[in-house]
Amino acid sequence: MEEIQHIIGNNLMKFRKQRGLSLDHVSELTGVSKAMLAQIEKGKSSPTVTTLWKIANGLNISFSEFIKEDKPDVQKVHIEDLNVITDDEEKYRVYPFFPYHPEKKFEIYIVTLESGCVHEAKTHLGEEYLLMKEGELTVKFQDEEHLLSSGDALNFMGNLSHSYMNASAQPASFFLLMYYSE
Image (cartoon, rainbow, N blue to C red; front, side, top):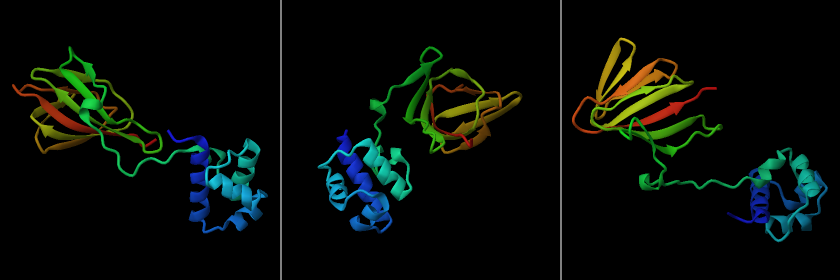
């Protein structure tokens, strides 16, 4: 993790450049000296809370924006690095590739069911987007069944009572995107 003064400095420079402002102009808007702003941007000065509030108010941005770390442009996830979640005597496995984040409103998993596994899913908010990776899977909604195989996809509301069933002799695996509109 980067030192907080470098995070603050990088964020200040980013906000300033996005708005096409010079250090002089930011100084006029905030009441913080040009020299102090330059030191903050270079990560050579750790500003006080009062100074950060002045800058935030002058630039009309949230105080907390200064301490946010940039996420990398590329995020690679290895399945072996994930904490697998199991159910049904470990015949049902969920790999959380991209867990829920409130700003993005979705999460992505790979789910694997061993042969003979039947998993009764709990109803939930949001929508499910299921994309079959390999094998065969039956998704059941009350009296309605959908048999899916590699390359098939299914979309449904999570508030429907549903279950996943692998009646084949091979494991079934699918990508699951959960989308939450609210």
